[in-house]
Image (cartoon, rainbow, N blue to C red; front, side, top):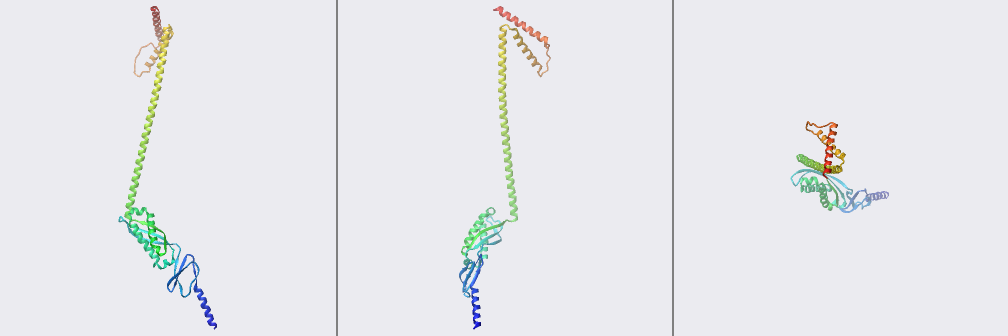
Length: 306
């Protein structure tokens, strides 16, 4: 009797132990009853029916990352490139992920590799190298739609590397170098053009300023000549009036002034000349005196005539 009670106690403890299941955070367990899915255990303590129920699949509910191995892809313009990538996904429904597809990781990997060849094979090489964000977006849309029935949410698909053949890389390098040399030549020519334009504009401005300066100088020279002529006219008028009034000193001053100016002009002339003139002061005074006597005689004749 005592042995039976002990055995019953041990059996009861064993049943309790088998019925209590602890699920860690970030995991979910499926429960199968006689091989058929019944429910899903969430993180924490859970109770199942021992012997009848058992744990089926243990699914990781955290976001996971999977490397996509390198593969060769033929582009639309028949260029062969080597491509690899990475995919991020998360199990949203443990039951579907466990029972809707066999070998979930392999299925996702093959789906991504197939769609990489499809999407990238429909593009030219130039588009492939310059529109990586568009490729990632297309792959994400296609793969996420395809994995939704499996209870999977694909969060990101990233192309890590696109490697064209070596000869194609060298050709692209030469093309890029030629394009840069072309841009440099264009910029240099544009710089020379701007320099010539600025130089021409500067020369034009200088010519305008020089012409304006000559114009202003001409105006000033003309004004000076006009003032000089007016002064000479006034002086001549004054001398004429003085002669008419019988003032001999005025005509002496006027004649002496013109005489000295004539001597000055002869002295500064560039050509060589030999001139005999009364250059000493007594001769000049004598000449002036003779001119004065002529003026007196002219005035006396004028009075006699009157």
